[in-house]
Amino acid sequence: MAKVTLEKVAHGFAETGEVICELDLTIEPGEFVSFLGPSGCGKSTLLRIIAGLLKPEHGRINVDAGGRKFFRGFVFQEAQLLPWRTVLENAALPLELIGRPRSEAREKARMALAKVGLGDSLEKYPKQLSGGMKMRVSVARALVAEPSLLLLDEPFSALDEMARELLQEELRRLWENLGMTVVFVTHSVAEAVFLSERTIVLSSRPARVVCDCRIELGRRRDESTRRGPHYWRLVSEISGQLRLAREGEI
Amino acid sequence: MIARIVKNIVPPIGLLVIALLLLEFVLRVAHVPEYLIPTPTSVLRVFGDDSGELWSAFSETSMAAGLGFLLSFIVGTLAAIALSSWSFVRRAILPYAVFFQTVPVIAIAPILVIWFGFGMPTVVASAFIVSIFPVIASTLLGLQSTDPALIELFRLYSASPMQLLVKLKLPYAMPQVFSGLRIAAGLAVIGAVVGEFIAGGGLGAVVDVARTQQRTDKVFAAVLLSAALGLLFVSVVNALAWWALRRWHASAQTR
Image (cartoon, rainbow over all chains, first blue to last red; front, side, top):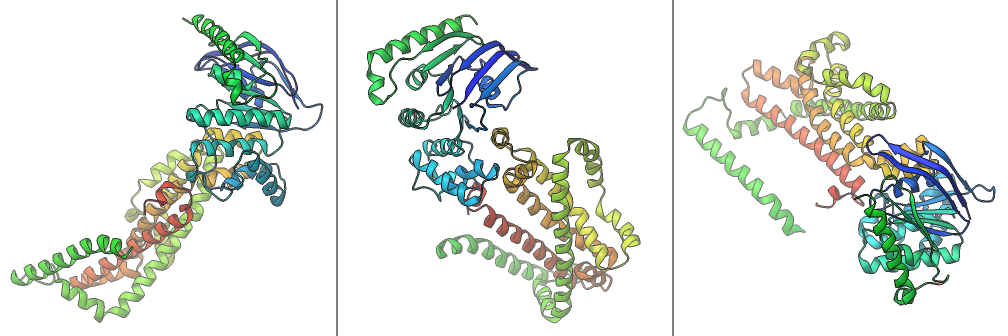
């Protein structure tokens, strides 16, 4: 499980100006953290910095898994599967890239796909899958290298309500069972509250932390969690914070 | 299945037969001289009478066009990979490539004869020169249009440049590679025939010689054969494209 430390991280682009402004943040090992913010506020940029895909202009970012070598898993907004590969071959890709033998890659891919409930669609091609199934393959691909840190960038936003809730519940269960640090970016308050232990609300550009809320809904969460009064209270509280964050911009 | 083939094949073949019959009738009734427009039946007779000569010319041209096409596939793909890998090389070379493309092959053919002599090598070079640019342009476009998110995915696992090329960029570019090859296949035949006008051999020479002998029927027969050769080349590429993309790409599913 990885610990993420950000010290005075700032970043900007030529087209947009400053996107992230002096951010200090610590994500504890094994935490499930959601970044919540208005669209275009820089939360995806922040996620890419944590993923190591983007080097911040200023400040320091450190990801540490107890000094061990570790992998990051990343789930994009769209499933981003390779259309010429079968489900199994897609899920095995990360292990191929890091040079594991083919048989081991396939075996682990099969296990990862079983975890997301796709054990029987191994030989299908992405075009034969529904949006929800594609996203499951994408999650399996991110899990296959047994990452210490899993990053997700609004992964369920393109799915219909039903598929979205199902995948949220599965993601939560995976986190409960697998023991990894998860950073989840979303613009849905309900999603952030249901999934995470900690929700960080960001202001619009440049992103600053508006509030850092603990979500105390217990470790085991399922469908019934969504019906509890505590859940609704948290959703409305954080919606209020998000509204405040938005009003700052207007 | 058979019903669908019949539905797709009967209308064009039917139209062709009707048009040929009509042409035959008009040419005979109006007494149009054979050296201006030969009747379909006399062209058909040439296929029978001169079948040996036409067949050897056909295979010679297809050999030269095929070699030229194969060369432009190999060289063009390698060139596109090089151009897409080094942006400096791309910026340096691309303007000249575009300029070179505009030089008509008929104008270069005499130079090719000076360099390669009369016969096959010049014809192959001519086919190669006209067919390489679509290969480079399409492959380059395909290699450069890789989804940035997929490149990020590969970077996440520290993929090597070779892995990025072989496992992502090349397969991603496949549909564009094939659309370039489709254009190149037709152009290779044209390039070969043009080369043969100057350098001799194959269907190009048959056209040229028959013209000086006022054998217009033979000219027509040779022209039809070169058109058929072009069609054959394009069909082969289409079949290969369908086979390579059949499992995953939309272009292969509408058939």
